[in-house]
Image (cartoon, rainbow, N blue to C red; front, side, top):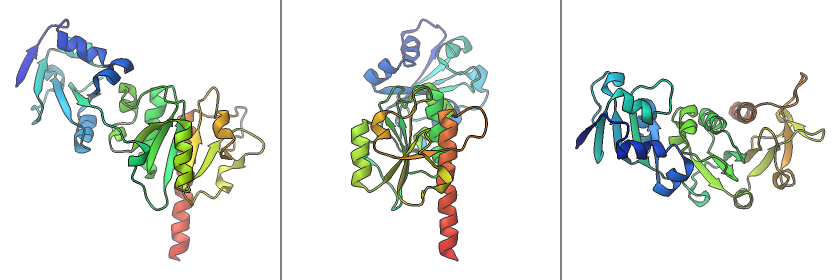
Length: 266
């Protein structure tokens, strides 16, 4: 059933706008996706849509075939009220949340996980998830969660890869037990004289790269339980943005594993 909304004070519009808040998303068990590509990726990966909002003035194409309870056709003013992007294609969906637990993770015989502790900025988390997708990681695990996976800016910066990557939230203790039980070696990104340059570590075995916040670095819990890795820094600065560090370390894992495969093949 389709509906037309032209008022920004419509209760449904106010409700969608409220879903930009983490607490409301958690209580309602739903989240907002904006953009045709991101929505398509979510639906392809089994996320269930509840409502769909289309602004014909912005979208400018034939409306897609959508199997949802309600389709709302809204004015440009209304769409701008619920949109969180400065530039949008005019499509927005509200979907039910779903997220795996550690016990539900599927992974390869030689797994590689990226573990992020206390990440605060949604853009960083989204970029890390995008990197995980790029290197074919088995998943991203978020410890001591400070921003939720379904934050609109996580979805945007991940370019929708948050929907086809395994992303799990758990406590430090739960994650450590999981890694130990599956014989996955945790390597911590730690700035220290004792840290081993990442290209000298053996990352061809089951591996988890653990990263902390930009300001505080990796917490004591993980510092005491990981093999310390570092990225060589030749300038005056001694650290990188956490998403940049994650990308460098993740591609070092991939590089070593590709070389290892070539060596075995020869």
